[in-house]
Image (cartoon, rainbow, N blue to C red; front, side, top):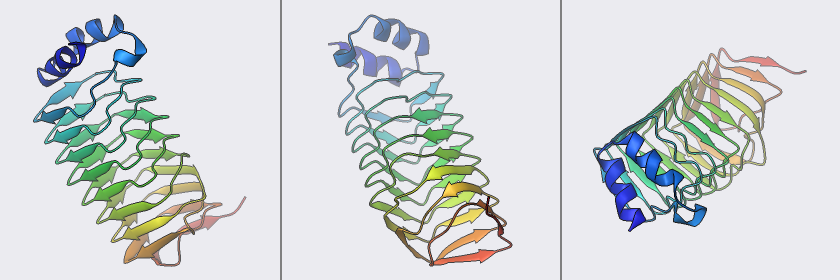
Length: 206
């Protein structure tokens, strides 16, 4: 019963009602497994600790949404916009994001194992540490943004472009890169995979 009420409040964009109900629930009741959201607008919603496994989000707009310690295993986002969102210590194993825009957001200390990101723009977004294994990223554009403390990477990047991004203590040598570019980027103690074409890249080793 609580799952249907929570999902209904989210679909209605009722942030206050959603928070009022979720505060009264036990941790194992913060569960929206398998729910589908279409054209939903969320602003200021706190989804900390929620189970969002296998949820599907189509043409949704998430602004200032917090996804700390959430489980998004197998979640699918298409045609979505993330603006000023905070995703930290979340399980993003197998998450698929396609045809979306991520702007001014932070993705920190998350498990990105097996993520499939396709045809998506990341603008001024910060990535911090986390597990970067078995990535399948294609057709991505990163404008600005920062990447910090990332290592032990694996997977495949195809048609991925970075422009004006800053990398600090990042090692992307473990990924297979094809038709990837880095332009006007700052690399501090960082290395990109051999498949990257670089232009006007500034390198500094501390």
